[in-house]
Length: 429
Image (cartoon, rainbow, N blue to C red):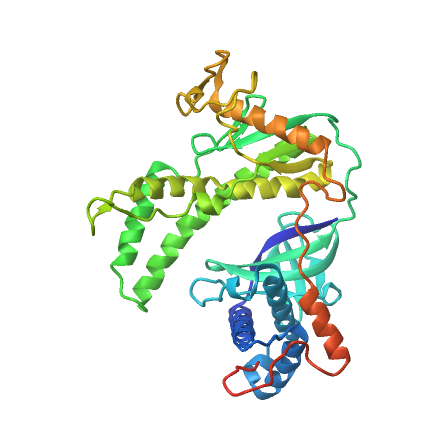
């Protein structure tokens, strides 16, 4: 089974500078290739990976700064862009900024990567053109290396190995027939249908106040100054600390859920829509006057939702379920907080408060989040018992490979599929 191992690198000053140049070259190739794809689309044409890879070879012969970096990293950037455009569309793929996107690049050939252990704490890896790099081996590698990704997070560099650990998926869960419904909230991050709560405060009150002070210090600095760089680094350092706490909580919660239950049911929440901003509404009786939109309270709710890391918890549970044989599915969240799990009557008045649910029909009283989690489990058992024919419950939608297939066929025949004639103004790699 494929899994990831992430370690902190100990690069020399020369290696760190070269890694920055590799990341910059990959970012430049990504942006240029994306702009090229968009220009072709505007003119009714289409260009794919193979044609762009051919142009990349020509560009490396012309520009020395492209030739000095590993060629497989640049080719992998084009592959990642092709997959992103096939899955999300050319116009929804984002640019990579030098300021907002940390440098990252991948070595796709695991056969060219050698890993050696030096002692109890340190090991080293041989990466193409980077040479031997030391890293702190905090856990065993535990498998054959398939590829390696190098990235910078703050002031430190990290390497992530994709390894084949040799573990086969479990055929049957240790607790067959067990199931749990998960209700994600703001007051309690995770509420289980058996009445157990998983909660953690990721940013303490003093840290929130300190983050506000750091943001104000950043706002008073001039753009492009060294003082602004130091202030931004302090803001990012505090945010990084909170993010790692959130990742740790998600991993521990996922391990508990996957190890304890065969069926784990989440709500299919549209988090992006839930955290969208509020637009002011015009007053129909007074032209030019807008009604209060409640944007301030909505922004506070959005921050609370994003702070809990709802999607990260579900993603970590799905990853961990590969080892335990658990089934993780998502169900429609409609009326789960308003339906009584005893008499199944739906009434919004039954939800008296955030924590109190008292059914107006049968007087059943329970914690509101626990009641919602039980409804989620009931819906999940019904959906899991009768899956649609030919469709695996919880499966991802297959990616569209039509464009890449057409491009391969056209390349084999000596032409470029769906491409417009080359004209002035189209950037080349």
